Length: 183
Image (tube, rainbow, N blue to C red; front, side):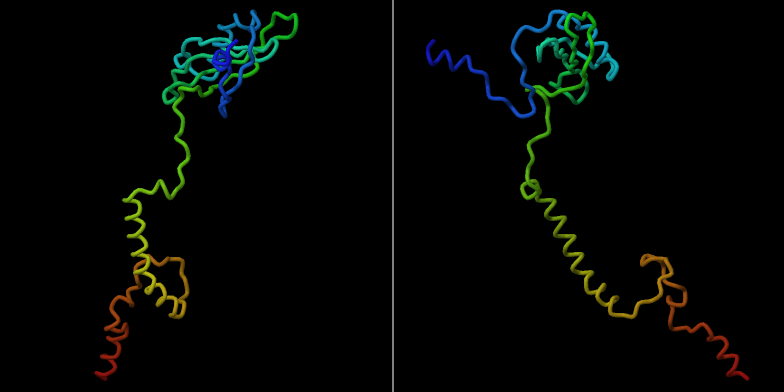
């Protein structure tokens, strides 16, 4: 064999998160159990979300994974799987695992981008406006902290001031002083 031919026969490097399949012929009984694999998948998802059977792949002796196309909204390119197994010399097929896996064509989340690279110009403008507002409020907060602390009645700082605080020009007992002057 030539070196060029050997390069074309090499398997591609494994991708992270993508299962590596064993080579070889799958168990004939397990490979034929497509309907059972589909029925088991229908226990976790509606039948309409399970597409066509894509194939059966051997994982170990008497262990086969059936793959089905996913028609689930938002999961383009994903594949439903059902792992089937059987004991030696047994004709009873057992389902080991069912679920949903991404494929090479799957719609996946984009690669992680650091925060400093994700910030948009409008985000920076909003942050600067908040910082300016916070800087403008800082002296007011400092003045309030310098005054003696009043008892907190649980009303909070957003509560309306008491009526006597609204108009300090007229004392509450102003009518009583006039009455005492008249005597």
